[in-house]
Length: 200
Image (cartoon, rainbow, N blue to C red; front, side, top):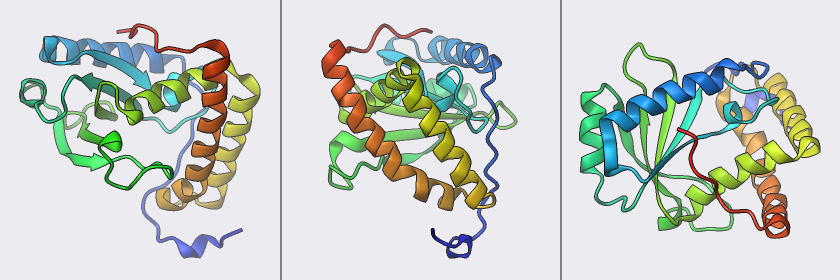
């Protein structure tokens, strides 16, 4: 096991048991995003661990906003800025099977309004790998209790090893995240999975 000293302190890693309030908090934020952005988005989804009942998570609401074309998002971003959401930048998700700056991994990342409930907005393009990844990973963990329990154990152990370093925590979690996705792809073929309608 890597010594914790390899990673500098960044910010504490705090996992909470699943909170039923997360779903309601997502629904309220999604309502505000839809009201601001209107037809500029094609769908909006609660993703990440707070979207999986029974799974512990950092107290951050992750939301995926899907658009038709990521190069033409002014109609989405301008009303969101006016509503207080803060733009980070265009960046790329990480997936070991694709080049680092593949168009399949590109996204626009935004944060909650100042003083608002901690939220990460991931704006991704319809049909891209990263948009599908987020929804499939979520649905697989919702449907598979053993995988969910093992993932929770991994997260808890990573947080125990790196309680003061989110970088160290993610360093341990990331390969497992991708490994679970391979199992999720097998499951998707078996059940003929397709993303359902968004729940906003």
